[in-house]
Image (cartoon, rainbow, N blue to C red; front, top):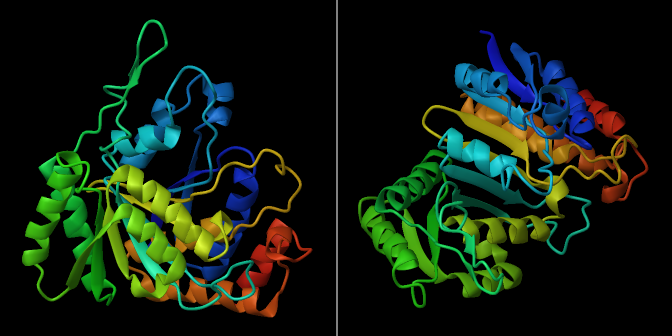
Length: 335
């Protein structure tokens, strides 16, 4: 069966890591075909828009997109192209796995295997209600939490735990201080937890969560939380396992899903061929899971791990002297 996915090559190092990723996917012979679309600075230069209508149409049609990092220009336009894509397609679940990898610059080369499930469309990241007074002395931002948004993200976390054989969901909040917004999230999460008695559930205040992640990350399995807290925690978790170069992300909604590397476009090393493609490759593995190809997703992850273990073609950020495509070809050779 042939599946067409929308491919956004991105800005900065984006085209380099995307080419490397597609090289590996092609070696897997999965019957994937690619429909290329523009977004970010490349789209602005070519089409005069950060997100052209043709790109939106492609994602809407194919329902699956693989995306490299995008640069949001300073001044005017969207506050973030990534946030705008999530809002337009109602990609309410941001799923960020963090797993220990061998031969990485990390304090935890084993023992970490968790997933952060972050509410992706409301909370502190909504543009409505962000205002600065005329004299520039006062800035106001509104955090918007809904029962619907809270319920569907917590339900997604429990469903993910059950589907992937995970045993525990930790609800992260700040309801002791933010009694209205975080309080509604926690109250809703408790209701959903009662409907899922087969999965263990515990609650943790966000600041304690950060401390516990640094001290004993092995105690966590699935973390579910609100938008801002999830953004911070998921990057913290990436730091536990070697950094954003090993951090994939999935943005999942009812009608579409976008898979990505969560790091930036790194313009300082763009064109040098030294960018680490692992984050996007791991995002592609999440995409294969979503396409009901879990065995192929594990095949890809196993090839990445085997290449890291062999220290074959590693890019400079991983302590090697290899290049982007060479690293990808080393991974492909282990498929």
